[in-house]
Image (tube, rainbow, N blue to C red; front, side, top):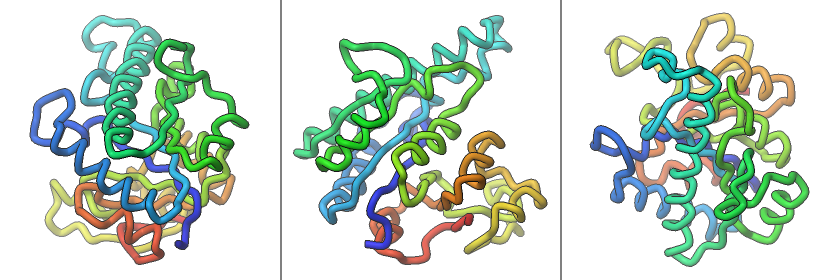
Length: 234
């Protein structure tokens, strides 16, 4: 395998499938099967999942909720998704650990770097919930930070689009895909890959990002095997 230890970033919205909100059991099962394929190859896997299918902190202000309070609500939403993913993974016989940026000891271990690394070394899938435990930081930032702390080989950002394009391919039919692009080019072209904090963390620590379509079966396995899937940012 090209990558021995990966951090997989999934959006909360991806779990909705065709629903308006919540978790689609079919989509969840598909993701679990993709992850199991990679796990069976001996790859160490850490996962960060968003909470946008349940609640978004940045949208809270428009409804009169304090931004900090809204962000904490969003963190709790990520824990709900993480628990659902953990349960689904364990049903297939995989061993997992759920670690949280905020203390919810009845359902999650508190995040401790050395313990998280040890879980990975023992072959457990580690899911990071509740972001980094602070408001004003997105789950993209969490993914970048945890990947650096875990010394992951790559951040795999699973989306519903098969890479980075010159424009939004869902809105602009003339948009063309970049098979590979540098961090500097993404800056200069103003492409929307991750929020700036997350992106800068990866750039400063020479941590490559691959943006790919998680909904296409086999993509995750192909990436860890070294095939050119999605867009590589390095």
